[in-house]
Length: 426
Image (cartoon, rainbow, N blue to C red; front, side):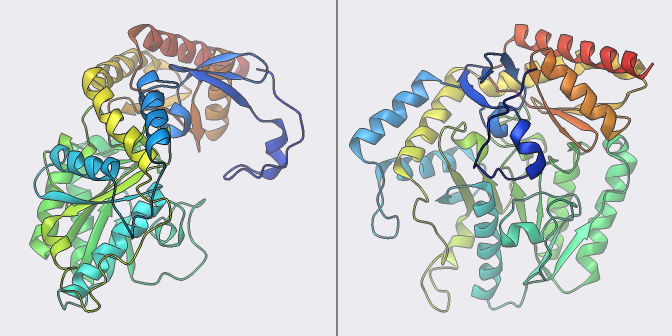
């Protein structure tokens, strides 16, 4: 794989400055593939930024954006509403279960976390209760704004500043490979129960249905249902972060659909607009929103952004829902994800691979070391498939438009990469 060596003034996040001059530069994308500046095409196993769920350059999404640009680009959401945002909020209420009817539109997953936490904490103040403690995973990732970083115990996102409210972290009781057992589920629920009982009444528990950056950890079936019961027992709000999992990524519309539960608050981004424009959403139950009608200052939600609920982004979001339904992308995610997992079962005999796990079209290969993970991911790129490697875990999350032939191509590239890496180790 050839690299671009041209100097750049662009300061890219999450990449060591010393590495930025020699990294891949993507210049074109079509369907499930991207092209670099040297003319090499790759199957996009990363989905852009894990958000290109409908593939790249989808004509219906481009048409929706173009049509809305010609009619109304945006208008101040504090002054006036507009049809694309109103329609998207109504369609989310139809799509989400239970009383999840009230949506605020934002720009990013991090903003959604900020808004969800503000809503949860203000909700308890509106009710006259002094609750501000939040419980989450140690290996959580909920974004990189101030409040979002406070929730994470991951070494690369942990905040250096004191949290503005109490945050308790729950660590995994077993390795990611062993977390899919019933024993692990029992232990994990026990840890959340202990956290809920250990301090003052908690305002909220906030978790991802699947730990994304925290190691691509798949939880046992029924874990979220049991966590829902725990929160109900303690009168604690349950916030589910569906930024990565939502809109078909796990083979269901939302990650929590696997357990058939309804959270009190859900955060969404990435797949909501297919990555075509910045868009995020926080949806809450009607009973939560009602408390803001009579809250002390009566100013409603005191959080928002200039481009939150952008008309063009919302128009694309509405069309994403149409494309997902018409092209059966949720069903395809489940089918192609199952085929990937089955095909990757052959890696079990490799000494370089310690685990293969996944749900829908998010599949992870855990290598025996970070060095092996780096080598396998690099070999995959040379074979024409891009994947994302982090701390020994290679994550494959291609667009939901993946075809059966694409799946076979990914499997062949991975098999070749593992064999080449093993041969190089001697």
